[in-house]
Image (cartoon, rainbow, N blue to C red; front, side, top):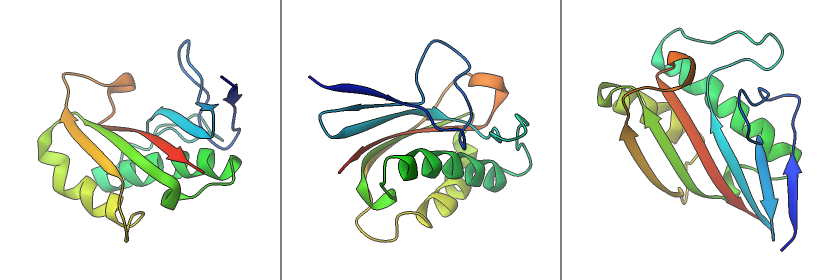
Length: 126
């Protein structure tokens, strides 16, 4: 197995013992991203739509570093602080996946890092 750690300055640095992303045998596994701005280390905790937009920007920065786009994503996992956010998160998420969206699950959890409302991880294939 070939394993490569992906580090992207335009996405937030990990806040624990994990990598932003790992490439293994042509598959990119992206760790959960939250609404932290990589340049300022500030959280974007406005509306749930603004928070989701920042999360997707962070994911896109990692994909681009690996010369991929959202079209290469085959699986997403969305973690929400409340299912009350489901429709608004979906509205923003759908702007990235207009055709052939990836497989996905969305779950509400008891808590997320830094008390965010949304965290998204992805798997992409070249």
